[in-house]
Length: 115
Image (cartoon, rainbow, N blue to C red; front, side, top):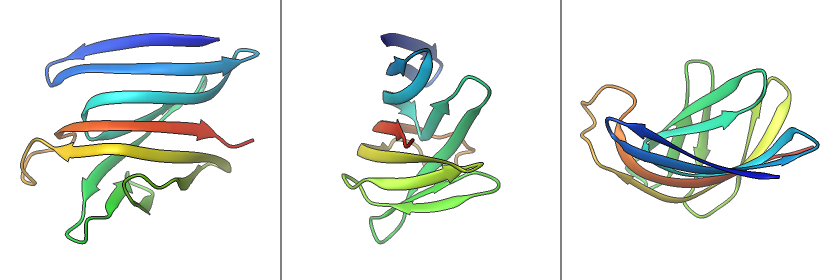
């Protein structure tokens, strides 16, 4: 089953398509107006902020974890022994580095739960 949802936030509209199999979350494709990757699982939602480094690579981080990624290349991230494959296809910051988190951005990604 695929669900199609959208959220209207002050920063803009976020649209996401979520794939479920036997009521279990398998994947999400999201187009966001914030620099945040959200992995919405039944018991918890994992968040990673996205920033672009001077090298052009992407930094994915929260208070406990930091990952490095490249635009258009799959990256594996792990939360509490659960791995996800994450592919960021578009990232364009729309607010300054001095802005508080989360920041306005054009972000498109797909995430798959690795079984």
